[in-house]
Length: 409
Image (cartoon, rainbow, N blue to C red):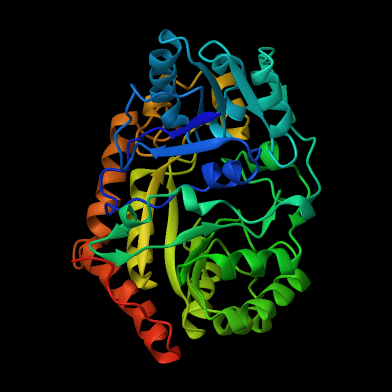
């Protein structure tokens, strides 16, 4: 059976440094496909879709809300040709009801151990409209190594420099952050993978640079300590979301190859200042993740906050606008208050205002978003800051003998 798996193109943030990372969801899904399925993967962010290919079945994997309308367009073209289409991925789960209007089938939930039935049903012409496994999680021990062989590897680099491969060490989240849907998607319980499974997958990746995509590693201190100890011999260099604010954990993370963290910078407190400093003390760079548009944000607050961000010497920063994704407390609150004025999912890029802020106009919040990007990178452009971070990781690789030269000029 010829199965075409497609990852639709999506709009990037205006000021963000331009590079494309290999997607994670499709390679996890591909690892769970039955052996008899011949899969051809197309990432529309780096490739064009050939709609004339002879295929039996099409899957469209969508991680982001901003991808779904393009996913619908792609599905319509194949369905017009008489080819059945199934949707899956995070965005499919967040928009399950409306997704059913645009596909022959939708898959909701985690895929391990579930796709044999889907493809058998397709073969027998009895494909279900919905395969609903939301919160019916497979044993975490069943999560194996993602199938990265489907990727066109030479397309994922930045100016010839090898970028990161994505991998996950856990699922679920015990936190309940205001703008986040992870607890809806992956459950309210932290579900760590066994160390040997994680290390086996990391060792199999032909790339020394990884992005551990877990929502937060700082969920179980003992688990973090055990994981980092197991990772040390790999000599990988990696980035992640927050690490436990603990000397032993940070030291082991540095020994295990921690390169930089994405750290939410939610205020201008001494706690945040010290948090960034402690990462730096252990040689771990920090890319601040700054969310604009909360109800207490005024123009003056954001400008003073911007001064603080420059003062604490973040290595990089990414600014986003509060976006009310379905199945988040943000969506519930703003929708109920009738403050959302755009439900056009193409606008849900995290770089566009789609709701009425409390302390300023939508236009002013949009203006402040661009102000922050421009102000932060005024002295050193984003490309230069990115170069400095890449140089750091290359220096570390040269020191331990794992450095590989540029992938292409």
